[in-house]
Image (cartoon, rainbow, N blue to C red; front, side, top):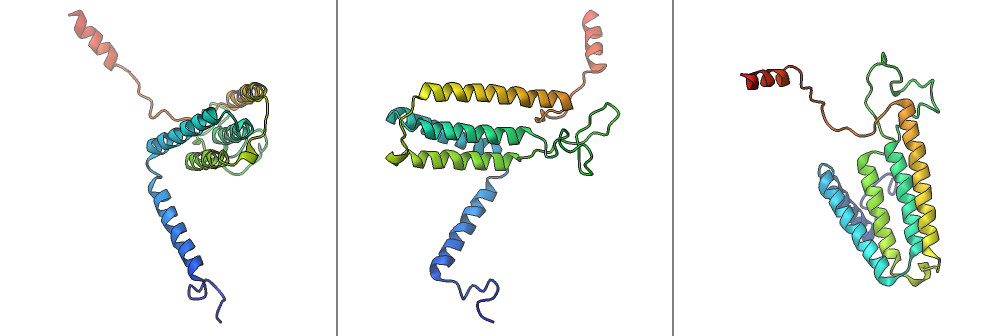
Amino acid sequence: MEGVGGDSMASSPVQQRANEAWRLYQYYLDKTTPHAVNRWIGTLVMAVIYFLRVYYVQGFYIISYALGIYVLNLLIGFLSPLVDPELDASSDGPTLPTKGSDEFRPFIRRLPEFKFWYSMTKAFFIAFVMTFFSFFDIPVFWPILLFYWIVLFFLTMRRQIAHMMKYKYIPFSLGKQKYGGKKGSSSNNSRAD
């Protein structure tokens, strides 16, 4: 049966080139996975280039506002647990400990770090490309958009922080805790001699 399944002979040369390009793109994207700091530096450079472009052309504020709302949405997903204890208290899956006697369960994000980075990088790239098309430059009074975004950011973050405090979770890991113990007291005794 020709044409049934994923027979590569039946696909056109253009489709084969597109598949090769996609595989090569995916290969290099996979290679960036362990290099989180370098990925975020690249995204920061892209964001600076985007903001310089917007500042230079003095326009595309509505694109910047939409980008800001999208990044805020991604940030909320990054800071939120996979299973929200407020919505799903009777879940059989992993939940956050709410009492001191509860078993420790690691924090599992709703939006993993790699997907957060990848979505943010794509968003800045798309917004940058959109600044080259004049029909996206809708005239708006940008201070009102900026003020509204700042208010939205603070209200959303206040709600998110209150949620974190209520269910006692911290979405960041600062590494293994180090305890001073008796080592600090023995060094004080040796100084007294």
